[in-house]
Length: 214
Image 1: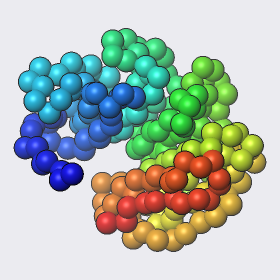
Image 2: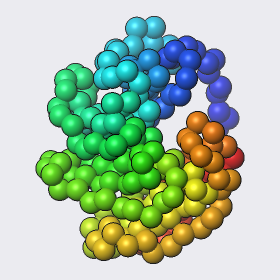
Image 3: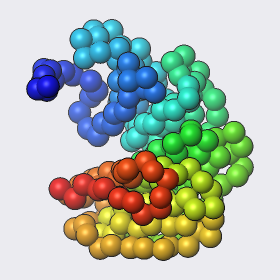
Image 4: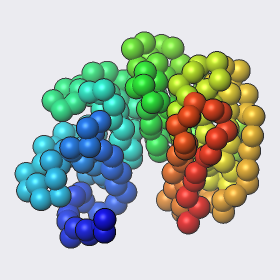
């Protein structure tokens, strides 16, 4: 079945944007440098719902009626979906987070920041956090493996230091690292955001970790 290319349309003001689908794949959720999250029922939606969450929004993730955003006030916030009601702050960094993502069940959120740190936070109890240290530059992206088993779960992160690293969630130790990216001093200068994805979803650790390098 051939793909049908839809015309592009204006979504946010000039600057960084991020996008994801809702759980059913019925809505497109976007965020941008204007500080808004927008919920589009389709590309033809001329009146998307808009939720202002801060001055700038760098990343958005959605799972189980929870909308998580990385905001320019150095916080990772949570809102209800699709209502958009504030539901608290999951975690804070010393500078802005660049990427947020849920695990497969929606029980945890991983976030990577420009202060070189990666955090994993329990959604129900945000006081339950783990911090991962080891990168030498801002974090570009994070991903949690699909097995969703805490003892064998691993998270992966990519950084402006040129590396993609895999960590054991239980021990918080780095178990693998590949230097595959061009180094940069800041996310804005990075050649790629190196978004990560685990495949297939068989529950086996180290099946395949896919990343973008260009």
